[in-house]
Amino acid sequence: MSTDLVQLDRADKLFHTRHFFSVDPKTGKRHFYQKRPIHAVREMEFGVRAGEIFGLLGPNGAGKTTTVKMICGLVRPSGGHVYVDGLHVEKKRLQVLRRVGVVLEGTRTCIWPLTPRENLAYFGNLKDVRGKVLRQRTDYLLDFIGLSEKRDVQVRQLSQGQKQKLAICIALIADPPVIVLDEPTTGLDVQSSRAIKDKVVEMTREQGKCAVVTTHDMNVAQELCDRIGIVKDGELITCEPTEKLLDIFSEQVYELRLDRHPDTRLLEAVPGVVSTELEDADDGPTCLVKLDPDPELRSQAIYGTVQTLQQQQLLLRSIQQRQQNLESVFLQLTNGHSRPGATE
Image (cartoon, rainbow, N blue to C red; front, side, top):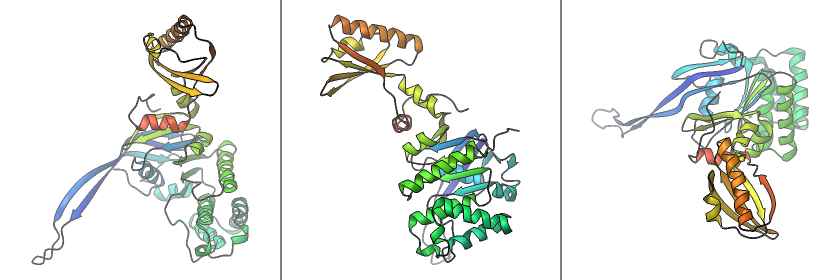
């Protein structure tokens, strides 16, 4: 058995959509118009260790939410297995629910007629948190998230951002070892967003919890996540440490700042040079040279490129790798470009 706090072992989910004709007036029966299978998740396999923040990214409809719902026990896998803290989610569902704190985007997590304090008392009792411990955690979380002044106001009177803050408090009330956050900073102001990110880092680094984060904000993912899994059409197309994922793409493109435009046809004839692109700036042009990912070919291409520039009597002002951000890597992968490695 894996020591990961979260482990997906070839987890698979197949849904069936059904569309009906109107009721037959003679028989009173409905007839199938169409029954179509939808493979939401295909043999998903990854683990999340204690102390790790794992980012699960993908386009809309890629299977992210289905995956996190399988982790939380809200969706039953069609195949494979899901474990949380060493427990099989299907066989030990009640125990798993106490070990997972979850915030799902677009889900009404809290009870609107109740106040934040009453919501935390209700959900804390559901997870066996009671008495002095419950009161202390309630006060701490509401103060931490910035809802102390709203603790006795009905939730229906709170703003969307304040409801999101309360949902995060509810996820944390039982001090679970596994935190699942679906778009955790949506609707939050800058200060609250910063506080949430700092809290997630604190819980993982200092308290040994793990967090699974899904987000469309690539800046949040790049800043927060130790490892990134990218999902497309229900499949995990890559799963790498964030820095390694960025390095894989960054090392393929070099920026050459020159005094004037080079003959790009000569550069593209250099073995190992895949393509070139020119960018103009006030201080002169920059030539972007994309190189072969093979280390030996890339080395030959760099020397060959410099030699070709010398032959054209161009002044090479600087040369450096272009550092990619997570957004550009995400777009390259989900638009069908090269896949930088298998899942771990």
